[in-house]
Length: 392
Image 1 (cartoon, rainbow, N blue to C red):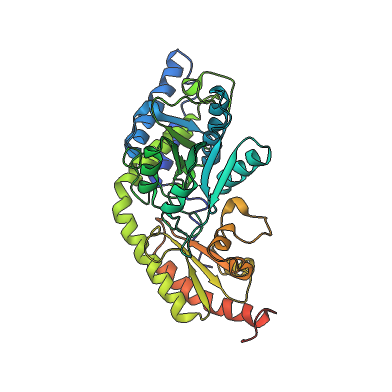
Image 2 (cartoon, one colour; image 1 turned 90 degrees about the vertical axis):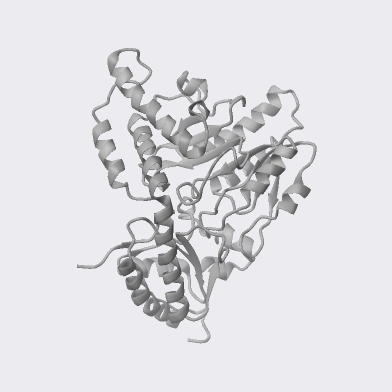
């Protein structure tokens, strides 16, 4: 039987066994949490427990946690809120946003739409060759109309961790809202909203061994929220829609177990990542490691394989039972080169040849040995067929 190796955990993760258990139990809870009768209260109580767990995980208070359907919805809500705040204050000039060129599409595409319609002005900051944002660039981009700085905690494609503590401090000193998309960082690095001076923070359940369809938006106490979704008084009138009881309970359990396991899990993932990197460098010539060599997520390794297309590597790897990615799952189907790799160096061939290996809790040393065995001949064969290659 063919071995199956899943190395696409930044796209989505399998359910943690303990999360799966609470989902099965929660399926018996069918009462509407907003109903006052006993069936509703039976659903509301575990939701409150989950909210407390998530607040504790982020160093927040329960009333600062809003449940959404995804990380993308949470990101969109923040940007929507900045626009409406400028209108509510009758100060439409307070509509400048600072972000980076390597943010997730949920941030980049939304900001570009608002900018195209003339509703917001945006500064898209560059990154260095490792994908790191300069805090000096952040300071220089600030003007009298800057309302928001939104910088991801860690990049989903290359794993580079950003200096969000320093950026949060810059925002605070200048009385500017600070948001961080922590979807990929959650469960991999320590996140405390008070320590990083976050006004908004986004996480998503399916990146930390909970199911899809559940996200969180942290909103600092005292900040008024204009909902992205209207239609009811759910989440204290900040996000309409009957609560996803099962998803919320599952996410509460996920952050609980991830918080307990993170330190040991990170050690294991970093060991496997370094083993994989060394195996690729020792056995495959002409490759480039993308992202910061040290200040990066312990599970993420992005590699460009010269002279061949990343999609070909993905497909041939899949035939061997190895699941990897060419970048963000949210960009699948696009023929454009990775905007993240292009931000490191404007080289379409390098960007098109990149593969992301993102490890998870279920990966083993044997998995990495298998990849190191199977990938070199795949690369060699593809290079032999490649019209880009003049050396093989």
